[in-house]
Image 1: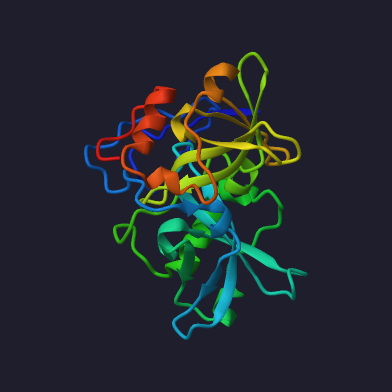
Image 2: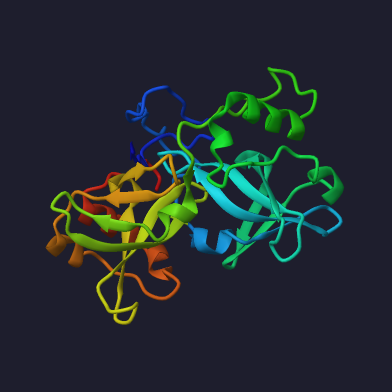
Length: 279
């Protein structure tokens, strides 16, 4: 398994992390006042996945099937599903996150891509169900050339292959444990900041079959993720004892408490997390 230490204090950049070693990527502090540093709306990954992608003619050309994350929580690629009927024979491609015009308002996502269905049908597609092609420089280059034909090397920073295909859907639902192997709960959702970087994970703790469960926001920087290349599965750990976790601030319903003045700061203080300046 590849150990990945998340780092919400990294710069909010769409540049992907690469390297031949499975060790942690080098961490870089976010600059003061980074534009993606503030949680000013509830942007749930659970509602992002499944969003329809429409073109300028308001025709649906694809659906967002997943989000590929860098270890710092930054979105790097969106996985698009297109073609087929009711998901049968659907094909999948990846689009660099910055190329997808994505907006969120009132809890709803809108994704725009200026392309016809016929044009998108010619995109490079995945052959693996864990999207390992994203680790292949040649395949990533073919995606870049498809969405930016004829673009010069100086026109825009070219996306790079990822070291690990960390999928948001695999993080959601992952069991959370500590170094004592205590069961701390399950990651129910991920909240994105206005730079579309994961700021908090929502952990479901306690209860029986979801009844009586408490929802605890945990800073992304406090999680350690292990990624299994063979099947894309993710396991998560956090260095905290169970009693301290149970004393953490709670959220309910649609997690709107996260937007209350000072609440996110309270969460960060409880877990000993230091957010970037301006968060």
